[in-house]
Length: 216
Image 1 (cartoon, rainbow, N blue to C red):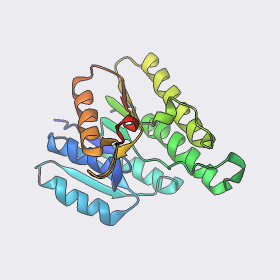
Image 2: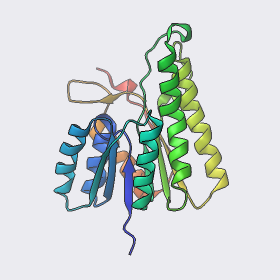
Image 3: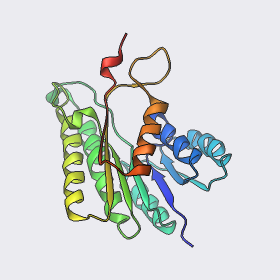
C-alpha cells in the first residue's frame, strides 16, 4: 500500500524546518532536503521521534546535477505532497547593482526549481504547496528580481489550478515571520500550523500570513 510522503525543500532551517516539525507531529512521512547536511541530520533525529518515516537528502538545488540526482531519488519514493519552500532572499538592492551570479541563482531557485519539481513528480503528486512571499502580491522598490520570481510563481500556481482540478495547489504568502518572542510578526511555529491546517482542510487555495502589523 502506498504511504503518503511530503517533500519539503529548504528544510534545514527557517520556515521549512518548522513545516517539517508540524507535518511530522501530524503523522506525515517526510522527505526533507536542504543544503546543510548537518542540520538535516539533526532535524531527522527530531522528527523520527514522532514515529514517522523520514528521508533526508542534502542537495544544492542551484546545481543542475544535484537537482537531477535529487529528483531521481524523490521519484523512487512516490512523493505525493510537494512543499516548494527553498528560496533565495531579496538583497534589497537596485537591479543594476546586483551581480550576475545572484541573478542566475534567484531566478533558478525561486522560480525554475519549483516548476521543475512539480513537473517531474506529476505522476504521483496530489498536493503542491508553494511558499511564496507577500512580494508575490505587492510590488516593492529595490526588489525587482525577487518580485519577478514570486509573481511568476503565483502565475504558475494560478494557471495550474485552472488546468488540473484534481491537483490541490495552495499558495502561501508570508511577510514577517517572528523567530522568537522578542521578534515581531506572526510566530513561525504558528505560521507552520496555519499552513498544515489549511492543507488538511483544503478549504482555500490562498493563505496570506501578513505579520507586518504586529510590531509593538
